[in-house]
Each structure stands twice: as C-alpha cells, then as structure tokens.
Image (cartoon, rainbow, N blue to C red; front, side, top):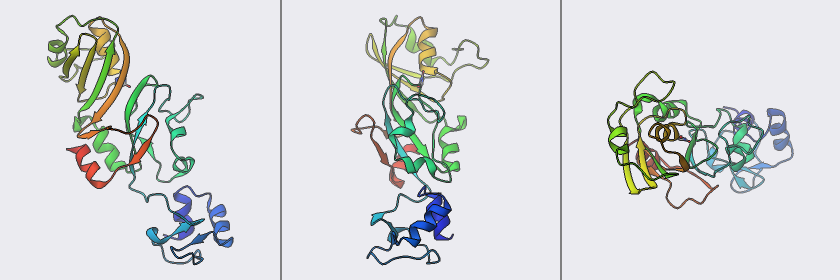
Length: 232
Ligand code: URA
C-alpha cells in the first residue's frame, strides 16, 4: 500500500492532507530523514512530526468505561470515543466497540478494527463469559442464584430463554453475575425479573481478560497474549 493511503487510513488526515505532510517534510524515518510518498512502507520506522505511528490495523484495545458515557457514535452527550485519541475515530478499517455497555454501566469495554475478532468475541456462539459486579437496591431473596442458573428464565418481551448464568453472592446487596450472552440491558432486566433493581453495574471481566488496575477513563492496547487470554 502507498504511504499516503496508509497514513490516511490510520487517521492522519485525508489523502490530500497527508500528501501535504510529506511536502512539508513532516514524515521521516527513525533517524529524522525525510520520507517521500513513494518510499517503501515500514510501519515501525515511520515517524510523523518525530512521533511513532499509531498501531497498525489489527488493533484491539480495552477501555475502562466510566459511568455517563454512551457507546454510540451519534449520541449528543458524552461518548466513549471522546476518551480515545481523536485520530482513532478516523481510522479505516473502523475501530468499533465490541458490543455495548449502557450509559450507566462502567467497566471493561473492548474496541477492535478486526472484523473476524469482533465476530469471534461477540457472536452468540462464542458464549464468552462476561462478569459484572452489581449493587442492588434491595436485599436478595435467596432464590435468585437458582433462578439464574436454571436456564428457564425468560425476560419480558423476549421469545427465547436465557442461558444459565452464575450468581455469586458477596453480601445481600452485592453480587457477581457471570453471563454467557449479551442481550439488551440483560443484567438489569434479570434483576427486575426477580423483583429487584440494579443501582450500579460494573463489568470487570470478559473471557479470561480482567480490567485489573486500569484507571477509570484510561485505555490500553492489548497484546497477542491478552487476545489469547480474552478468548480462553
Ligand atoms: N447488562 C446490562 O443491564 N447493562 C449493561 O451495560 C451490560 C449488561
């Protein structure tokens, strides 16, 4: 691929704008030597204004989503893309979130530009575990874990039963819920179905990948090892 197109696809500007960067000598190699638009492409050695390039396509990143941000690109309020470098929104292939978290849910949110990976993580067939920590408005009754694990729960306005889910009780108002699917507002609707209300919801894990110490609002690029952990 030609350098102008490559850099435009990484979000450095339109092809016209990137061509201008070349003319201004702002694209160099690692030693500061000016590069030309028809030079061969070596991602690692390219610099824009002396800075390393953003990661190449095949990007997988994890964001610690704060409460109050939506996963949509169109919402007029705060959106999760505001927390990433603006260039990331201009990339082609597109960097999109893997599924969604509600505006009022915090925690682990993945983004990728790799269609096959997106499909592998979010496909209903993958049944990847998603772990949520929930704070409830009322004390548990005691039968919720059995109801959730039974595979016989049907949410309002749905036509298929939920897959069995695991409920770990931390105390009567704090639970850890592990889901293997991702229906709309699933955790909140499950607790509504057993007469409770979720006051706070946080996703701490997807597959074998944990949010860990990542601060609220921060993001990190995931390595191949992380990707393997995620899918394990
Ligand atoms: N379940 C919910 O209710 N909301 C989320 O954001 C994720 C799971």
